[in-house]
Length: 136
Image: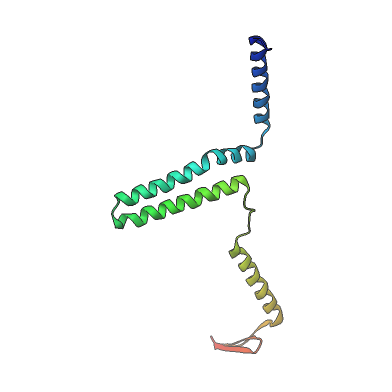
């Protein structure tokens, strides 16, 4: 059927084609494959470390270790999701709240303008129905 020379030639051609296909992959595809191969292993390793630490450490030290392990897992899962593109980037909610507050304050400022009157030593500030008088 095939002699050794043809078989070696076919293996070399196949290996060259696989290398060419690997070289054409973008970073997201490479990261996705890496996540598929190793991501679950690292998450499992962190959980096993937590279980072993719970068997050996005193109660006082346990809370700190579990906090660090939880933060590590959260960070790892977040990194994996961002690399894989599993979750779309979201605008931070605190920025959205700040934008809404600024918009409201701008509308309020336009509705009730502030006026300041200075008469000698007397200063009067009016904003809407509120009035404040001071003396220098």
